[in-house]
View 1 (tube, rainbow, N blue to C red):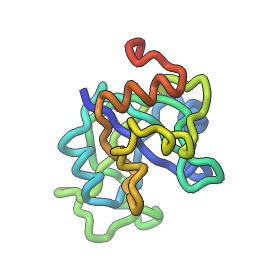
View 2 (cartoon, helix red, strand yellow):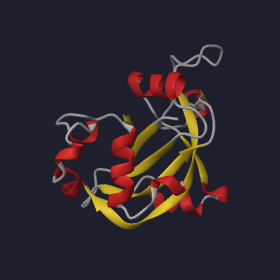
View 3 (cartoon, rainbow, N blue to C red):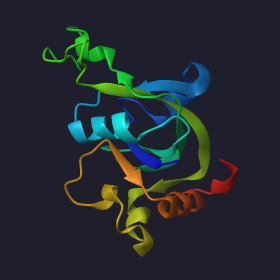
Length: 159
């Protein structure tokens, strides 16, 4: 099992939005970065756990835990000319862009803001903390996943 951090702007799609979806599940669509696409295609698997991270907002941070619940598959928005995520070069026979389904797994007992993440030397290697990182999905080490769960008041052994 791998662990991930998935970023979304809460005014576009938030952790609360995910919890309100049927089955508390939603396709993680709109990815238009090859490295992130490769993570989904080559490394993500159903059952992997991760964090939902609110970015580009007054208080960025982590509200809770998600689970990857599907294998990567073509992102249909890439083929829809009416979509903001349309890519005329993407071919349905050889799709360029993928998505995975994510599901709510657990709320943190408290929101863990970016400012707090920066205070912990144990987390200094997190990609989210590196200047210039704009990837919407980044891998996490198991130790970092456990540490972040504890910061959020969730027992990682119970997930």
